[in-house]
Image (cartoon, rainbow, N blue to C red; front, side, top):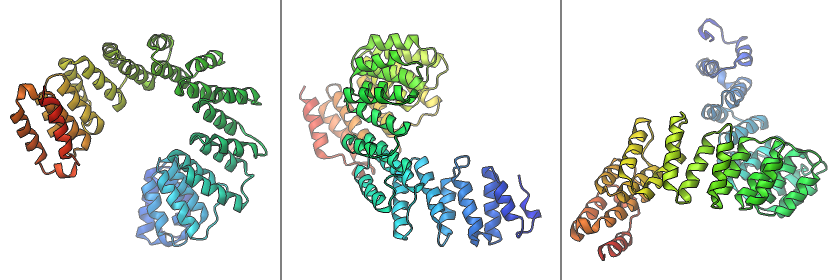
Length: 425
């Protein structure tokens, strides 16, 4: 750690900036630059942006704050921030900054464009991608290998296979990435024949080439083709195993999924989630819960997706004791009862016969969404016979009169339909 107060500002600051590697060093230098007004020097502030945007530090907020203080940031700095936005799953911001770049009469280069195109692909923003494609052709980057490969990936991910194939065919040299993108797109669209033809034509293959076929065929329901490729793979990775399990579960072939699961030497959380969710979606609620217990015994830590599946399975079992146990586990391990988990907990308690517990969960949620309101209203409706129709109306009215109700968009028709459905029984 640098002791900056011992140094004078002039000759040392750029040397320190060049040798900074950690977040702590960089923030110290940032504070030093602000205190001594050296932040006004473009060379220093630019270096700070570069440090903050580096994946090793990845402090996007500080990178953007320094960037915004530079009067005329260079194209290189724009590229760094755009790349950092895409890296941090903030593609909307990346495209917005790209638009600002064009407004400043700065011309993008072959570093800017692949990042922005990747951002469009992540957002499924195919129309914006087409506009950028037109700009690329005007700027003369149409033959750039990396830019062209990015367009193949964009169109393939968005399901625009005609455009993806055109972008692929005009490339002077098709790299492995563009081959894989095209195969992945055709496989996920269910065009098995075309995907296999391309696969056979590939001058070279890697593990991704095989995996894309298995994953694509599994997702589009072509499980038999997926298994054929899976069995031919020279080396199998976790993604391909998980894709096959998902494919079997979605097609209702639970036993084949179980066999693969038992054969796996290494599993990750995605594997466990695929099995638990598969059991639940196929109505095998008891097996889903038993596998969840086995997972916990093996010290595998569940995530929100795991709990979504297991709460749904418990609702199917209508087992209040299991529901309370899972709820207790969630509280002990720090899971926040909100969003989908809050809705499912309310539904689970309602279906397991404890409307009072459902009400406690509902009342504990600080910022209630429409799903939470709907779940508790339906839950109260399910208990209308034991609660009495007039008492039910009173309880629903009491809930809806709370301050948050007007913002929840729960309408009179919601309440009426629930009352009509359940109180006529």
